[in-house]
Image 1: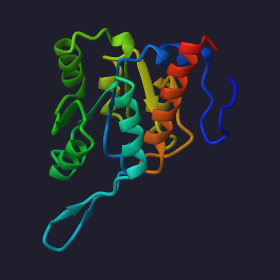
Image 2: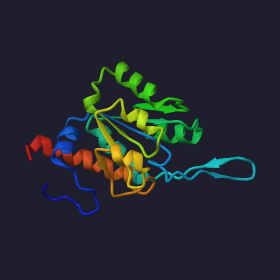
Image 3: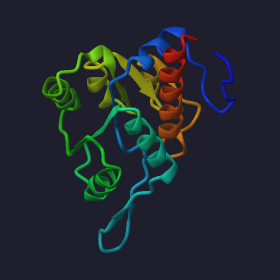
Image 4: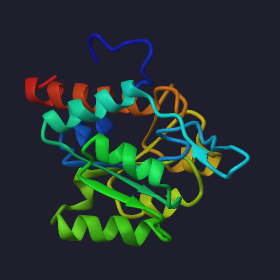
Length: 180
């Protein structure tokens, strides 16, 4: 592929074609949007760190008409608030079974799994992988996830993985339009 930045993980032609037809991407949150760290103070208040760079990548996808959502097992109001600020199309926090949640999203939105991607980093995300056509993972995902992933970012979760993924999708869509 022409003009491929060294900072992005390589992409096969097959995966690029799949991404060029993408209608929706769903992300896990902890370990993908964050590095998986949850800070708690002595009063039990939690904090998570999110990147505005990831947020801009999400905005760029939405500008192209791609639906963007999150499915997280953690029932975090911090996560909900951040994702509402990013104007996510689907926000599901506290999901006990990601497979069921993703399946419901696809049914409600009348989307074929072949045009939907999921990015996850840990064992519970394998269930969501079973419901989508494109499986993505950050560089520091668990080995079982990396083994099933169609593409693995160079960046780690919470450290640019979401933004890299967004840019790779945009590149694939634009290349598909140009017939590269």
